[in-house]
Amino acid sequence: MDNYITLPVWSFIIIVLFAAVMVLDRLLMPSLRWVLRRRVKKVMEEVSSRLDLEIRPFQLTRRQGLIDQLVFDDQVIEAVKLYAAENEMPMAIAQEKSKQYASEIVPSFNAYVYFRLGYWLARKAARLIYRVRVGFFDDDGLKNIPQGTSVVFVMNHRSNMDYILVSFLVAEKTALSYAVGEWAKIWPLQSLIKSMGAFFVRRNSGNPLYRKVLERYVHLATRAGVCQAVFLEGGLTKDGLFGEPRLGFVDYMLRDFHPEFDKDIVFVPVGINYDRVIEDRSLTRALDAEAPKRSMWFVIKTSLGFLYKTLILSRKNRWSRFGYASVNFGPPVSVKEYCAANKIDFSQYEQAARFEQVKQLADLLMKDISAVVPILPIALMAEILLINQAIWKSELDLKSQAIQRINELKAKGAPINIAASASEGVLTNALSLLIGRGMVTEEKNLLKVTPSTRVLLEYYANSIKHWQ
Image (tube, rainbow, N blue to C red):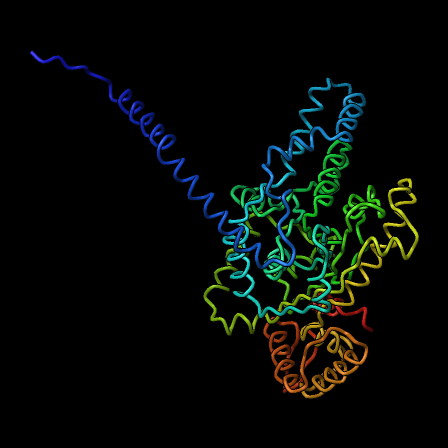
């Protein structure tokens, strides 16, 4: 008689699962890893041949290695000791906290994800909604930045689309590392953002240990020449005006900078503007302290509705509704040249005096940013409409005033790219967009500002108010 071994079904399932895992681990995973490494290497070779600013070895270092380097940094260790003493906790617990902070901050840059998936998504998203325009006021200056120099793009912050737009536009020149707020720490967005080189920041955190870990990461990345992007105002503008520069990140980069022997840091001013900011009503609504808080369900429902309506529109209709998105890159500012011209060394100052010097540099950078912020048709028409807000005006009269204003701005050297031959059509489209959004009332071929949307018009006009 044949002998059989009988197994319960659950035991058989477990054995099959273990066998499948072993096959994956021993046979398939090595092959898959080899294929992925080969693809990443191919992408690296391809992009390295065309980038003006190459990817730094620091960005390609194993993430765990960067975390360990950060945790065992001399200044971080001193901060851990001080934190443990002030909070009466064992050193081991304070050390573990610093490790958690480092793990939270340090990105896991993946060139394949950045230049294949990330670039594709950014390009599609930007071109899906806007007519994208880009200008370089000193393209040769950017190309001629010496190898090894740390390049920092400093920009104004008008929309969450800024991340996507700028990443897409500079992808032919370099890979950017952004500081991203806690809003993006949701799965799977968190993993995607980290793999694209971004690092998370707890804004307005008063924890001294966390601030020291963040400071040292920014310092290490800057010293390693990682190309970074910083919103100098810190947060989104709610009224359309330029905010005061936030000094934290710039100070992190400069407090240990020695102009005599350190590699140069070069700030590149970037000006961003939109004919329509997607979240404009939410931003201006935040100015009203009495406005009731919107629920999460309302935000999700509104966002999904917006996405659905946008996707079903034809490209022509989308562009008619959202208009232009434009980015200008200004002349680079060398920190070494700035220090030499002003006879200063940031590393030699105590904190209060250093902050005064950093603020002077940040104010200069904000001035450079404002000088290259594109003047777009909606901002221009918003300015003209507000001047005439109490009067009914014909479309012809408004456009005539706008053309006169264009000529004035061009005479001042303002960054406006509206050709005389195209101004008629461009301004007509701008007025149509404003009428379609209910910001302008039309009656008997006359136009007037809709009183309830005056704040929204001011939001757009304020983006070019510095040229008045």
